[in-house]
Amino acid sequence: MGGFFGVASKEDCVFDLFFGVDYHSHLGTRRAGLAVYDEKNGFDKAIHNIENAPFRTKFMSESHSMHGSLGIGCISDFEAQPILVRSHHGTFAVTTVGKINNMKEIVDEIIAKGTHFFEMQNGEVNPTELVAAMINQKENFIEGIRYAQERVEGSISMLILTPRGVYAARDKLGRTPIVLGQKDEGYCASFESFAYLNLGYRDLRELGPGEIVVMTPDGVKTLSAPGTKKKICTFLWVYYGYPSSTYEGVNVEAMRYRCGRLLARRDDAKPDTVAGVPDSGIAHAVGYANESGIPFSRPFVKYTPTWPRSFMPTHQSRRNLIAKMKLIPVHELIQDKSLLLIDDSIVRGTQLRETTEFLYESGAKEVHIRPACPPLLFGCKYLNFSRSGSELELIARRVINELEGCEADEETVRSYADPDSEKYQKMVNGICEKLHFTSLRFHRLDDLVEAVGLPKEDLCTYCWDGQE
Image (cartoon, rainbow, N blue to C red; front, side, top):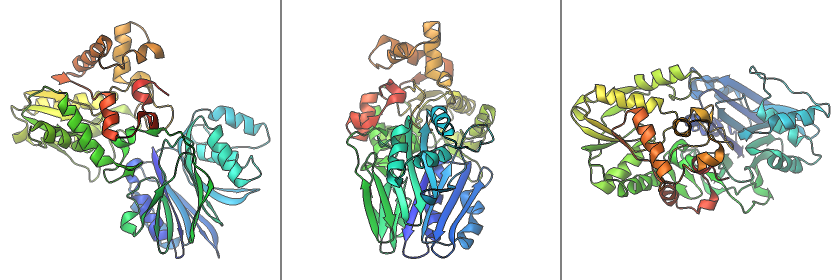
């Protein structure tokens, strides 16, 4: 995952850039970078590893030493960026969010024309470097951006820093957001809509699918109009988005309340209390509690001051250990209680099983699980959002394969997506038994779409129903 922030200001932009990028820290924990342009001194860039220290700590020096009126920055879980490129378009810096599924094909195609790429430590090409190379395939800079948007199978959104201004280009189907802010001193572009509010910016507007704009200190100009087809990722609201973020006019926290309410309306469980797995499950649980009348409680709390996000470490054993070590029980709220626990989703199931066992060991009588989205049946092929390296690691896929007696093909897997079918119920029962829950009921996709409040055709729901 990752997020980015860009500024075009009449004054020095580094203060806004530094904190604007920092407000994306919930989206990545491995790499971060800043690039600025100053009319007198030209480009300056810095990239740091942030695995063992927060963004603010690693970039405190640059926040004082860097200067410029134009800048971009990012936080990423993957490649080092922004990268700085010198080409026939001039010098520019670029940062991206997305996923390129046909990378090898494009790399081979460009290498055949006499271009070379630097390999990363894992032997792969930096996707952001590849985007820069695609832009350079065209004589016109805007045509190059359009070419990259169209050529990529998956998605790619980008910010590009040039001496002329900061270009912002949303991926062609709008799977990830780019929102613009404004104040008297200039303009900004951000993945997260809340990132600029405390910096004095006001909401301007959100870019449409495939739209390309250029920001200067004096204004924002559209260079390529938005398309009409949209497929924004629904998982942004369910999990990744920060509570104060808004995508397509729909606030994350408000959507999660609605999600919990709709979960409660279909449920017949009678627990003593409702709780949310910190942090993304809490708002869903509040919505459930408010609708059902069952008291909300926090039977365990998460100790976060020094811990990274639990699913970020490379090795599963470390993820599981950190997830368990972060949870601190409140025994008075657990002992002899029937608990209904809401998490944003079940991916592999390992962490939620350990959380359930942790609650039983702490004295819980029952633990009913209510994920805030449907079973994840397919690994995301459009964005680097999936918390599973392989869809075969998904607990739902493992159970389906056991029920089928073989590795199920996509058509068979899709047949398990209907919540009213016998196959679906067998899958849910299998997951419940394997993870040792008292009971399990997933959120329905039709209810999830209702909670978002946008037409289903505008939403990407591929990971749940396999529909592209």
